[in-house]
Amino acid sequence: MSHDDLPAPAGTDEAPPGGPNRQARRPRSGPHRAAWWFLGPFAALFLLTFAAPICYALYESLLTTVRHGPLGLGRAEVGFAGLENYRLALGQADFLEGFGRVLLFGAVQVPLMLLLATVLALLLEHVPPRWAGLLRASYFLPYGVPGVIAAILWGFLYVPGVSPITDLLGRIGAAPDFLSYNSVLWSIANVVIWEFAGYNMLVIVAQLKSIPQELYEAARIDGAGPWQTALRIKLPLVRPALVLTAVFSIIGTLQLFSEPLLLKPLTSNINNDFTPNLSAYNDAFANNNVYLAAAKSVILAVVACVLSFGFLSLVNRGDRGGADGAKREKSPR
Amino acid sequence: MTTTPAPATAPAPTAPEPRAAAPRRRFPRPGRILMTAVLAIAAGYFLLPVYWLAVASTKSTDGLFGSFGLWFSHPQWLHNLAQVFSYDDHIYLHWTLNSLLYAGVGAVGATLLAGAAGFALAKYRFRGREAVFKGVLAGVLLPSTALALPLYLLFGQLGLTNTYWSVLLPSLVSPFGVYLCRIYAESAVPDTLLEAARVDGAGEGRIFFTVALRIMTPALVTVLLFQFVYIWNNYLLPLVMLADDHKYPITLGLATWRTAADRHPELYQLTVGGAFVSVVPLAVAMLVLQRHWRTGLTEGSVKQ
Image (cartoon, rainbow over all chains, first blue to last red; front, side, top):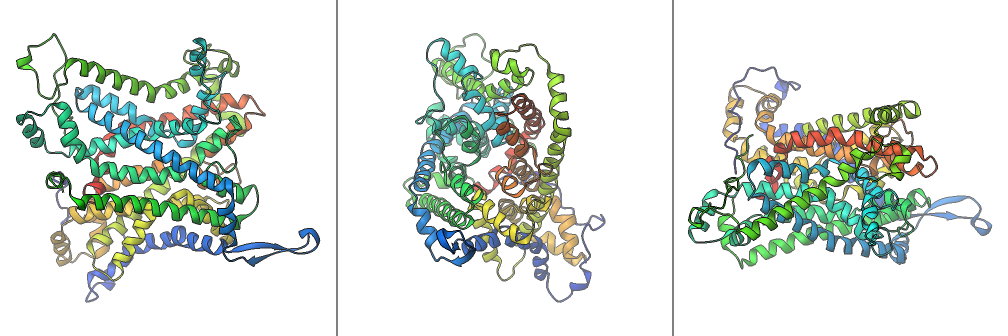
């Protein structure tokens, strides 16, 4: 890939050292000792904000509040509960339903979004550069809109009375109900697609740009039309980008939270357990049961890891299967 | 880094040309019309909500509900703007500054930490290196919102909730940044250069700050942008951590306005106006910095 335009080596520069002087510890200890000085700050914060919370959540998920006295109104104390919270969480029909909902959501929304992103990226290749830049920018724009604001924004566009969409369609007698029991999940999917399709398109565009031009020349000489070039050459070559975006999208859909939370006041069709994240949040803050919330967070994290690792290994296995080995020879390394 | 412009495309469509002279990779005519239509519809889809927001931010509360959404009605943009910023003792200004603080400090710090860690993982041989890298990868794949609640529980024990630190500290950690920096440093920073600097008597810290950081700039810029947008857009973490609305970032503040609007209808207009004000700077930055997003975005995927 292109690192050819990197700045020239600046090793002989006499710029003042920006960091603390490590002269004292240099001799004989070998330079590799210094690695921990570079890694240390990140590692410490990583332990504090990733490893420690997970361990603490694991610990809390094994606890419960035990109430004493008549009717459980007496003093409360924290006791060990074993896997009781997990049993409780997995026994809640609403929680499981929420899981099913985000899985269904992901199964529809992720392919749809990546399809849109890929089609746009491929089409942009055939547009004069000036227009391509403008179009690309307009597709990418929503990525700069925070998810919360996107949800608020689309919320206004979904509510009859404010929305110009229901207004216009209403005049021809086809006003849709974006917030009905059956449609609200897909209205949320629309918000997420709107936010991230442009970003994923940009990832694919970047990958397309790394394809050497000679390949196209060769394809043209072989008599391949634009469709064939797109399907047989470009699509296989942007596969790594698609895999990357798919993994991040899968992780993203599982965490679905702010969109349903902000659309909730607009409709009665979003309940407190609409998504696993929302369910855990409500347990912690509305129901005051942090232990159950911790268990649900752990379940969510495990499922997310299993799914994204599973997807990655599925893709890698497909690669080794090598039905289309030509692709790997050509792919830029 | 300048990227080459889009690969050669058809010249501007003028009068019908003879087939023989047809430029390469050009769609046949019906395909071209379809293509233009798809691209235009997509542009409409992505821009329409932002356009609606721009129009709606100029309206009065009555106009917001009583007039057609896609056209202006008694624009009073300056009045609305003043309202947004002065409401509730200038709280929106607080939110803006807080967002800048969280995203600015968080992104710069996270980039430096990720650059150092990525450099160490790429260029030093030490015990535990692979274990650390595996931990980082797991961090990349872990959903950040699944972490927010555990973080809240832990920070509650440490007495850190409802402080600036509770949002800043987690923002300083970017496993994806470390991953990207490692991959970039591995291929872009030559070992021979490091050796030469050592022979010249430069300490490791100096080598990193004067040599490595410069070479890694393209990757660092990408990490910086990613992390900035990530923190700026974050909602769940401040939501669980912060109780004092003077510490809120914009996202959280606007969401509370939106929720309270059912009881205080004037907040509808403020939410719309505030959302518009918050979208503009980031949208502009997004467009100006577009090419930086392109470079480096696929750095990780190409070399997986």
